[in-house]
Amino acid sequence: MPEKLIRTFIAIDTPETVTKVALSVQSSVKMNRKAVRWVRKENIHITLRYIGPTAPGEVDKINRLLSEIVGQNSDLSLNVSGTGCFPKKERPRILWLGVDGDVAELKLLVEMINSEMDQLGYPQEERNYSPHITIGRIRYPQKVTPDVTDFLSAQYEPISWNIPKIILYQSELLPSGAIYSILGTHNLNPR
Image (tube, rainbow, N blue to C red; front, side, top):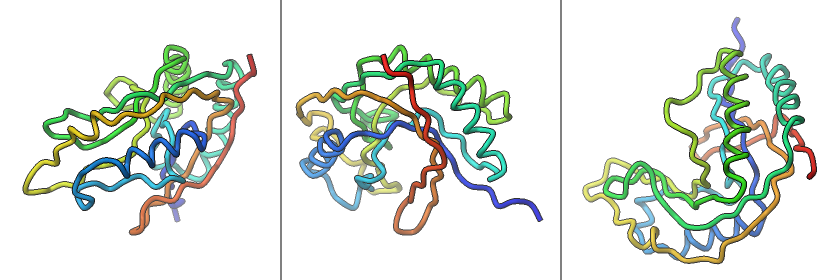
């Protein structure tokens, strides 16, 4: 009998200060609460790579690969600032907080991960990588597209933080929401 596949992804955890900003923005937005599924505080992160369905037997191989890649890179400094939505404000699906700082270095790290994951048989997404912190998903279908103007004009103090590690997660989808479990932690080199 074949192994049951698990959903996996590679991400950066956000510190409590960033999580508090995300929760503050979520609670300040004047939007129909049923129109948006807000990300729970324990699930707030920056995705580096969605892997998708993965055989449990592949997890060790992915962790070895990540240790090798991450060991070649220094820790990063990122800032959370601004808000936005994908794909466009007239038909939003994802509400996010912006990320800047060592974004060029972060994108290089993601390219290295993508290249190695492709060789393992996990094709990458077609779209270019754009680092962000998803804090809400618009529920569709709806009679009227939600107005995200309040969200896009939300103000908060930018916050900087150091990224010392990346994490391989399992995501289990339940009716109550996703539950994330750590499958591996990989430390970047201190500067």
